[in-house]
Image 1 (tube, rainbow, N blue to C red):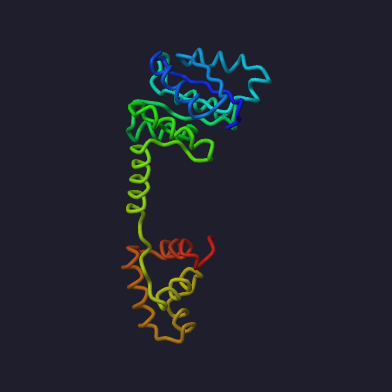
Image 2 (cartoon, rainbow, N blue to C red):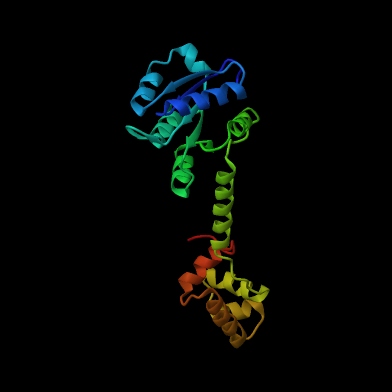
Length: 222
C-alpha cells in the first residue's frame, strides 16, 4: 500500500462508512478514503477517475448487500478494469455462499463487520505485507472447505507391480496371451491379473482399463 494511496469504500450505512474510514486511516498513514453508498454511485466514481487519481487507486472495500444490487458485481468489474486494485469484502455475511462467490469474483480478502475496530485495523495491515485480510471465521471456513475437498477426493486404488505392468500392456492393445508372453508368465496367471485389475478398478471393459492406465501415466491417450 503506497503512502498516498486512494481507497474507495462502497457501503450504504453511514455509520459503517465512518467506522471503516477510521480503520483504514489508522491502518495506512496518508491513505485517502472516498465513500459511496450504491453500485450506481461507485460506477460513477470509477468513471470519473482522473489519470492521477487512477494511479493512486489501490484498494476497494466492498459491502455485498447494497440498495441497488450485489457488491459481487462491482468486485467483478473492478477486477476486470483495474487488476492492480485489491478488492476486500466487508460484510455481515460469513456463509460459504457469499464467501466463495466473492472470491470467485476476484476479492482478495473478506472481513466480517461485527469485529472490534482494532482487529479490523490489524487485518487491513496485512495487505501491506502482501497477505490477504481475512477474519478468523472466514479463514476457518476456507480451511474446512479445502480439508473437506481433500477428504472427498477419490483415492487411487493401489495395484501391485505385476498388475500395473499388465494394465500398461492392456492399454497398449496387447491381448492376454500377448501380455503373458511379454511378461514370461502363463496365460492363466495374466488372466487372473486382469480379473483382479477389473475388480479393483470397478471396470468391465478394455476401454475403461485404458482410461485408467492413461490417468496413471502408464499410457498415452489415443
